Amino acid sequence: MNTTYTERDQMDRKIISVSKKRQITIPLKYYKYLGLDNEVECTLEDGAIVLRPLSRDSGEFSVEILKDLIAQGYSGDELIQQFEAQSKNVKKAVTNMLEEADAIADGEKESSSFGDIFGSENE
Image (cartoon, rainbow, N blue to C red):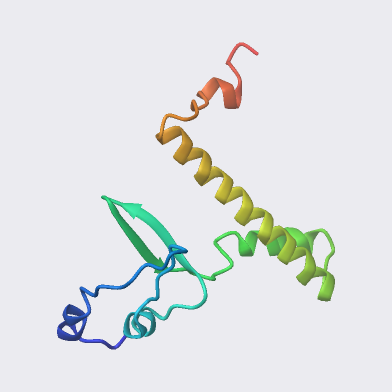
């Protein structure tokens, strides 16, 4: 990202077409500037669609997953296979939590209370 402020300012606005399949083509200079790959994160913010580079970092749970798998006796190729499986499980769980949070925020689902999650003090 060695683009200067002036160059970035010139990239701030670009009209692009939307295909019949609702697809767009990201201008090459934007694609390169952001270091994009074959996926981006898409969010809706203040009435605008925002696309951001998708981090392919295996996540903040990687070290914990590896420590747990090693403690369970995994090593070599088996460790790699188990790590990949566990990492996918974490990604699915986070996605599910975000979807549930969105549903709660949109009023489509009720949130759980502290007692629902941890039980009441009288139990």
